[in-house]
Length: 144
View 1 (tube, rainbow, N blue to C red):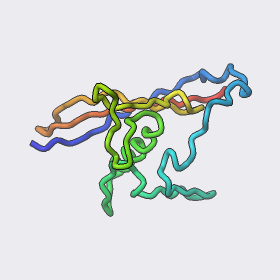
View 2 (cartoon, rainbow, N blue to C red):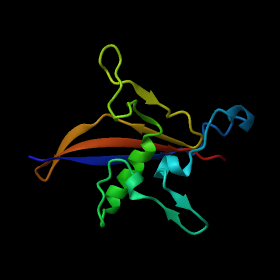
View 3 (cartoon, rainbow, N blue to C red):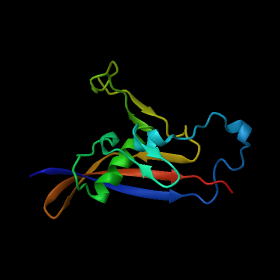
């Protein structure tokens, strides 16, 4: 039986920003995300277009006809890499601690208006196919 990967996205928008009552002078530690951080190094925009290079999207299998879902997942995984992940060496191998556990990072509180959190994966079955489901929670903060 082939194991496939699926992604579930949870969207939560807050009516009142946690930052709206904090003067901007006190929020200088918060960062805005760059275009490259969300869409990859080759992303480009002008007044009328946004260009995203498929080769910059993490875990995307390149094809001439990628589905909209696979492209969205590639964008989300690329963006999530700025928020949480495992520290790797130059060969993309996880760096481990003295207990042989991968060393992780969490920058989910570092950015001003967007937060992404990855939950643990779980297995499910749909139409006799086994899937690994990954959930990504996206919090978008707005100022009032």
